[in-house]
Image (cartoon, rainbow over all chains, first blue to last red; front, side, top):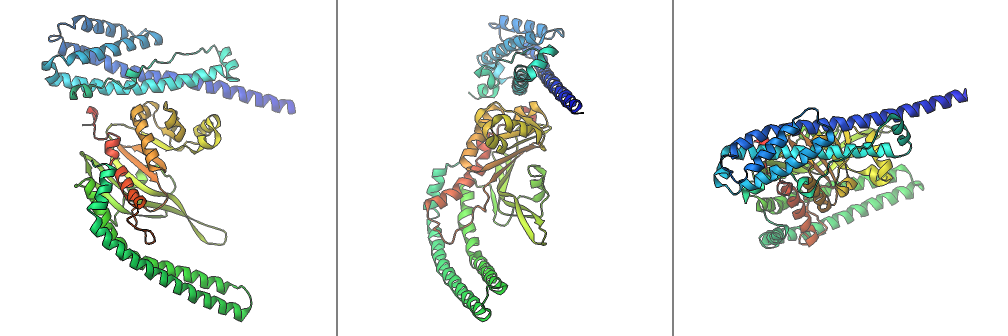
Length: 184
Length: 321
């Protein structure tokens, strides 16, 4: 009888550990889905933005071409998560540079369409920043679980491995502040 | 908006003539109350001694007399200071509110409605007694804001059938429009579990006892130490609580020196500062000219009205307009 109870308790603990690990992995995937939605929203804005500014921005032609090309790569549905994150990092930086460059063109600064795009972009950036932070927390929880005793044994058996977190540089922690650029 | 030091100047310079008359009134009341209390105390003592002398025991009668004396004292106090309190609010609090922003309206007897308070969802217990005063409402930089002192209670009955009142919330309650659009609910509550049980056990307790939603771990260590966040959506909670907003809430926490209860519900921000007492009341036994007293009135008004600026609620995002 005692042996039976001990066995039952052990099984229960194993099931709980297993479920908590699966829960954490799904949380990471779930939130990555959230980032994906926001990233797509931003990718959708890029052609619009490029079309609105390219006739003025002759000097930044290569920058615009590059960002369009990166966007096409990023839209590829078969991309791995790591690759997606790396591309996003590059695109963020480039959009930032374009926004700064807009400052040099008074016609663009006054253009309502461009202004609208910038504000939308700012909004999406805020959403992306939030999703990234949520993702990093979920990954940290997941990584902790697969490295800490006792769940690490279970994780090894399940073949779970560490996941990378998004690198959030100081400039990116605060999304590109388009409004501040305008107010200058 | 005026700074607290400018307001202190306003208090001691512009309001000085009024403060002086109110102060004279206060001293008159103080001596009147002292005499009345002494008289009530003396009568009660005589009657109590009389009963003790006649019966020779410490019976219920003595306690009843004592209780009646205290009750009479309380009623006398309330009646005596009623006019004084009104004058104080009209002559001191109202001009202070106006000095901060002319467009704000002040109603000494008004309060944030119970529906509003309940809609925040911060306190889930059903309310049996609800009261408040010192209601301020208006717009700051186009952002609607209202706040007042509130006291919400519930009652319980013990086995002897006696009623006991317990406080759900007492303090300053502020409602304002939030500058971002969101669908779910996010709650920021004082972190009692993590403080008393440490990070690991505290977080486990928090994650198992969430009636306000899913536990959200935030990435600001100071914020995370003092608050616990529950939300319906992990991403949305972080969309609302940006690193800079968390820093600002840290500052408000330090300034208010009280526990904060914050809710983000249907595009509104609800902030409860649990001071555990009635603010903006004149004291009869302490001078109104004391700096600490003045700073308390000014400090809380400035904190509440300054919220819009401090939390940048006036910077609307495009999606909101």
